[in-house]
Image (cartoon, rainbow, N blue to C red; front, side, top):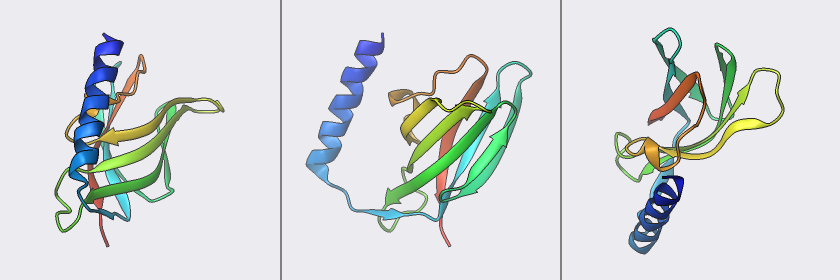
Length: 120
């Protein structure tokens, strides 16, 4: 199953590269986190380079981009998610708001999604 997702992600990246859509950088991102154990959903707004602790994970955003001229468009953000107190991340990479399954965070208790970029 992972191989299929990897192929799908490569195809999506290849088609995006051929279209080369101009992007703008946001000032941060709005994220949604789900604690699968107790069903709690929490929305959080993080500034660029911001860190937020939610339960037992820490979420850091390095960058958020969106289609130029369309801040409500398809956002994608570079996130690092760590278990609190651990050096190695459980997720590090780009997450796409409209297709979080292309590069999902694999954690037994938490799910995190990018909702949109924030702008000034």
